[in-house]
Image (cartoon, rainbow, N blue to C red; front, top):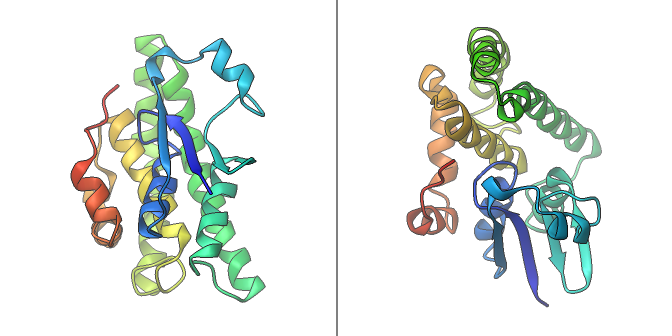
Length: 203
């Protein structure tokens, strides 16, 4: 069965899915679209809800980055069997995306002055609010959100790397346990080989 991941030629919300697929040893087509040229009207209209990422298995299509990541993780036993523990991990993923929601206005803003103001607020307020809490939780749970490797760790690293690209800052340098998790995920089988061969992302 042919598997395809459609996303931009950047990390963004698609990189954690790429990491999960490579870690799982899945063979898939990594179809990338030029971020700078978006929106492409023809491509946008061909998508179920006009946005990326889109994951395909044969004729079946799945949208929404977290739904795709969770589906792949479920097949790879990267979710705990207990429903409560699954819900706790889901809450972490949504919180990670809450952080990212503060970055989206910066990405969309075109005015340099307003863009600088948004970035300053992210750096001064949002990063430490979230990452001090992430750091504390990781320290208390053997360096992982679920006490061991789960899908949340992949999503987390993907968002951190996206912050590198868009904000031009390395968040994990101020949070050692976060930094250790980033290094661990990037050294995982499949992920390590993928990272070694991918081209640098640029805006």
